[in-house]
Length: 113
Image 1 (cartoon, rainbow, N blue to C red):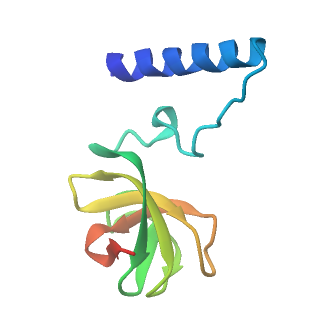
Image 2 (image 1 turned 180 degrees about the vertical axis):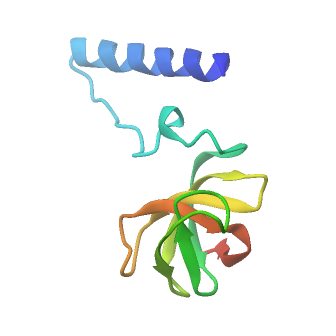
């Protein structure tokens, strides 16, 4: 956790310096390390573009006991940011009826696109 906080401070300092000297600033992805759910036990160094392999529920948390936020249909695009014990993936839906929603999907139903 301390390494993550140090990296965030370094990034913020670099962005501030770039603005002061007139350089360009790149923005971070929507789900920065600071905003990922505490349930995550593992996170990607960069978001992974995935595809839903079979119809599955998008859930509010990593487990069947959590509320369904909608159905993701086979072929829907899903960008994974982190997971819980390599069994539940957290990310953002990037196509289909639930486009733009964030949530959890059983990892068995997420594949490389």
